[in-house]
Image (cartoon, rainbow, N blue to C red; front, side, top):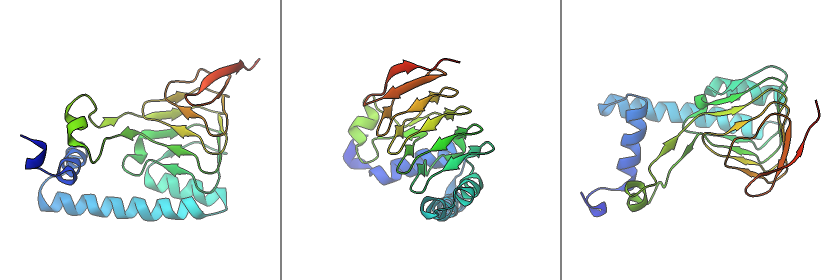
Length: 178
């Protein structure tokens, strides 16, 4: 089938419905309700200045968050697959950080069919990690225990425990003694 025979919206909707095992009109309605709920909860968590409420609302979306975590305002956690994000205990996430459990060339069916399909993989941020403001964490990444991610860093690969990483792409600049 050529890219002109179907639209990207329909392909993406089918991929998400298949993932959540929804089908038919009722499945589309369930998917819309799921997205409305997650969008409302995300919007509340994104704008609230009180980190306790941000954690509460992200948990209600399905994000697995440990105890004593601090989520600053303006943190974006995957809007489609929030349940694939796990954040350990005592983690700090700075403002304007983005954490994605999926990657998808949404509007480009050519790329989607030629080596760049939707990627859905869990993200694990281990206990004690600190993500400074403006970090981007991509699908499939594990950030090690007590590691620090420098401001504005883009993390495409796993970060070992007790490391400081900075840059785009993020690279280890220091090992933390423990």
